[in-house]
Image (cartoon, rainbow, N blue to C red):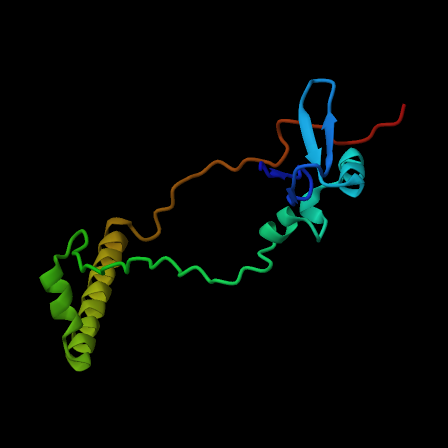
Length: 153
């Protein structure tokens, strides 16, 4: 006994039941009844019709046994050095006491300020006070002349 499946609803069609629909391109469709055939010919989507097997499968209806979730592997964290600092120096800084770290930071800031002040003094000493560089003044719109004026004729 061969049991067929309805092409629209997905129900089983037992021998002696259902309808065969053959298109002009000789493709065969089997339907369990005229309701399914009618909906198929109206080009209805079985995924959107609630009583079809396809709808129930798409929307996960009536699934009794829960499939165990696939366990994902945990990512193992590795500590690596970055450019300019190896892992041992990073860990040493991490394990420092906050007071020591704050003192180092203050010293670095002070050194940076000293360097900046020295650079400004050097810049000021190279530039002679009162010696201005002559820059010719350029009038705005000098290239255009009277182009921007509206002249009535």
